[in-house]
Length: 509
Image 1 (cartoon, rainbow, N blue to C red):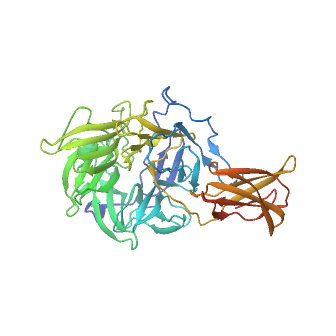
Image 2 (cartoon, helix red, strand yellow):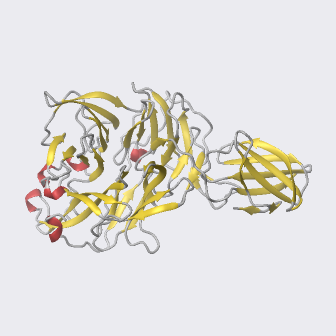
């Protein structure tokens, strides 16, 4: 445990506000002694679509509803640039006031789960594909948890940050050895008068942990206050002297190719390479004490999601604005790839990724290198996600119409085989026809839905089919019957799942 943390004191009932695009807010009431600073701040830069963005379809409502699943109210996603030459996979996002969701290239829902979650993605746990997310406290949970679910959407692991800390949403990265990299914050007493703050002030210690998922044991821990002085921050302690001073604001942790650790400090404008063995800083990139000279256009500010993709290539999301900033560093956020020149200790711009319609993300955001060389960018607080060619051409762009924000967005391959059965709703239509709707939350394999109808539950015959059409598919047939059922068929005609048999006019899950 950090030397400073021994002097820490709890802050009772701190209320962290995560401001979302469009003025919404997620309020998390924190437990005594635990502090999870909001990853978002005042929204900014949300704007309309530029003329270079072609509408893929008429604007849907901001919340989607389904006949077969009336219990779901899901944020709508509109595709503004249809996918072309995009990498394989689905889009993963977690609008903060709703829950984690997967959508396809047309913006159609694939899977949704209600809950206050963040940092949702597909990863591998012990070699098997899984879904992972950070989850806010709920019910009898006193601290945030990290959740791992299998391809059938069943929770297989749930763990917390170690050493009594409240796990933070900023990082949840699974490692091949069954461990996870996570982040946390803790409040520490500190005299901040020399920085314009209070003599009895409180500073936030940013913490990185590597945790054994199965046992919860902390195998590695790093504290910013042990290694990074307060004077490196661009966040003024005098800005709000009655609030904890978030001088560092850790927002990403990842292993480096040589076995050390890369850490991003948003409020110091710095990416740190840290020794895995000693915790000491090996080098700094950016900020007030950079070990690299930054070439033309390479300077970044208030960044997120730093990743050392190779010894000479570092990618990050360059926000260029943040709630602590007195004014934006620039007018547009960007995905940024830097080339590290070790002989001259110089960093130059290798590639930058920007939307033609400028956006300025005051908080959140990420950049992801895809399997085919494309790059996927989540624009954080401004409710967009985009895919680019390696040279920066927009190949896909979508927005959340609710103006909610997703901390990160990803494009990833996924095959879902839900444990729950499909849902159905039906009605008698005019002219002696039946109409039924089917959906299967999380399924990625059904190609066609087949409607069966008959006079009793045990006397059903096929009466119609329809190609899958997004999350919910309607089938209409000239038929009579008191009972109906729907079957989900694979491309080869094999039955993958069946709804319950219901009376016409009833809905079942």
